[in-house]
Structure formats: structure tokens, C-alpha cells
Image (cartoon, rainbow, N blue to C red; front, side):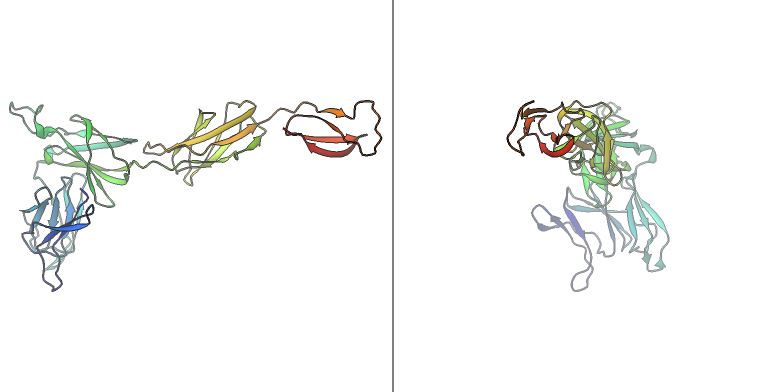
Length: 363
């Protein structure tokens, strides 16, 4: 739930502590909670898929904290009953905890132990076979998602404990999140993901508090808007099938729209570069283009800034000289020549076959 549990350790006077405190980041305050049954330091604390916390080591006993009640329950001792310390405790995908190494009063230890939260039979444990994400929808498939609980008539159809719990635990940060599902069966669970998730998560399904899980990459953070770098805004193109290019999140799919209609997609490279050459020619005249990006998690970005450009592949009509009039006489050696031409074109003037100058036709 975002709170932080601190257990045991040493006091300023050097004594070993059994006390525990909880920090609430919302209020920025600490509060005392239930004390450990034994004083401990150099132990490990592991957040379980159920939301409870397992404390192991120094001494050999194990304890589990329930945040709902603020109390501790003493569980069985480690198999190597020597008060293992400075060991590692790793949460496994199926919800068990792997205890490795450390040392004790007899020296350094190479032994390995596994903690089981529920003591359930292996046949009861759900198995997660696949985890897939499409935007904010998470689909988990496997077996045993309905558990083995029984209702009053001996079946499982109406047992309240037959409903699985779906949790996500960040591999990097250890935070635990319960995710509401939209539908479930004995072999599949579909859930709605919250925004802002990014990274690898242990995805656990817990029917009857027995966990099965799998690590998966989850991303519900929308990518930044792509950038269209070519053609340049306001540019003039002499091809009707231009190449568009730009930058976007690496690996994302960029959808290009010209004049508000999709014209194709491109995949951004590892460096974020993408390009797309039109296969259908554009009409002559002014056009606009913009792009959106969809990352590997199915999250859509907002649209890029719009780029406007003009396609002009046809030669202009011949200009017309209106002054001086054909056959007229002028009484100056530097007459003014005038006429009409396509707006924006450069008119080259020659007299008696020799270049006399250039001018741009106005709008």
C-alpha cells in the first residue's frame, strides 16, 4: 500500500531491537506497530505476494507481519538452526522465498532453504503460463486459477475464496500492487492496469492465498509525441511520393497521417529514427502531416506538431510580357518590362537572347 516497514536493528546504545515502525509517505509520519517476537539485526525482510512481510534470520526463527492487523506471527525455524545472518532472501515467481548463504556461529554457509507462505500442497498451486499486455489491459493465462476451496454443497462454483487475487510486485523497487480484474476463469484472468507502470514485475495469481507467478515486462507509460523532421515545415517538394522521417521512442510504431488520413506506419530504430516513403502519390498543392507513436506495451502518444508543405511537380505556364507592348516604341534605353506569371515563380528576362535579369512574381 506504499507504506514502509522498518524492523529490528540496533539502538544508539548498541542494543538489539525487537521493535517495528511504519512510515506513511502520504503523511510523512512514523508510527509504532507490533513488535517482533525476537530481537533481530542483519536479518532480511521480504514482501510476499499476499501483502504480508517475512522476516528471516538472527535468530533462526521466522516471523510474518500482517499489515492489516499490525501483528506478527512466529513461523517455523530455519532448517539450519544456527541463526543465519547476512544471507539473501529472494521472492520466487510462485510466491516462495529462497534463502541463500550468509553465515552463523559455525562460519560461512553454503546451504539453501525455501520458505512456503501457506504450506499448501504443490498440486494446489496455480501455474502462470503467459502474461501479455495490450495498452492498459493485462491478460494472464495458466492453470489452477480457481483454487481448491469448496462451498457448502461441496463444489467451488459459489465459494467466495475461489476468486483469485492478482498482484504486481516491482522487481526493481519491491512495491506491491493489487490489480482489479474484469473477468476470470480457472485458466485466465484479465485485469485493468493503472497508468504509470514501467519495468519488470512479478505477476502473481493467488486463489486461496496460494501464489503462482511469472516475471513480465509491463509498460503503461505513454511514449512522448514523435517528431517529424522531414519534410521541413513550410517546405516545397518536387515529388508526389515524398519520404517522411523523424524521431520517436525506440521500438515504437509510428503512424503517419497526411491531411488527417493514415498513410502508413514505420518502426522506430534502437536510436529512435524512423522513416516512411509514400506509395500513393499526393495531389499537387498544400498538405499537412502529423504522427503518433504506439510503444511495445500498446500505449499511444499524443500527436506530433503538424508539418505543412507544398507539392509542386508541374512546370508553370509560360509567363506573359505585357509591357512594353509588342511592336511598340520606347523613348528610353532602360525601359521597364512587366507581365504576369505563376505566383512565386522566378521569371528570367532576356533581351535579344542575352540574359537581362530575374524577378519573382508576386502573389
